[in-house]
Length: 217
Image (cartoon, rainbow, N blue to C red):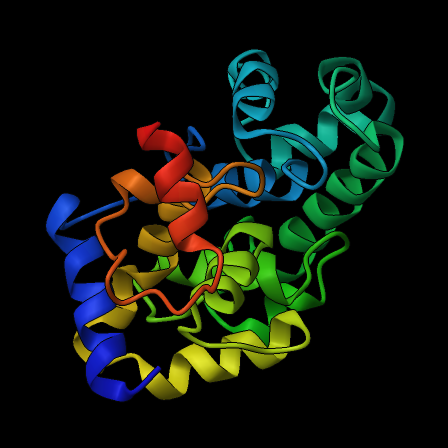
């Protein structure tokens, strides 16, 4: 996809929701960090159900540390990998309390030092909590970028770099959310809704006509 086509692509997605945000529920950078860390192999709906009970009890690193690994585990048992997630949250909370005074750092390197926080999670926090123009490539963005030809890449890092290179600066602040929402609700993994797609004419996917026609029949 050319730079002009990529700009048209993201501009059209932006028209549907000029100021998008995550579907995870949170009210502070720490709560966002917790929610995103819990979202691995879990749905946003499932995470929100867990944090709905967890956050009233432990909404700060200090409270999470006091709750402890076993206590955290009791609130997140419904989520995948809950044992490892509880361990990571307890240790990450300890680091935040001891090294950052209970605050969440606004630097990628510091965030990625926290257990359970990789590049994708750090990008989400930097973008959503602090307003940085970062793009966190999850399964939805990886699929949309490759399927449509917007920013193809063999792995998430390659796709992230390709998106950073082709998207205009004016759109980078919200591109992460526009692409996730497009992948979650329109350009789905199975039976994408090509007949309803706002960027159908720009999409380079060879199979798009087949899916558009099957929806119309």
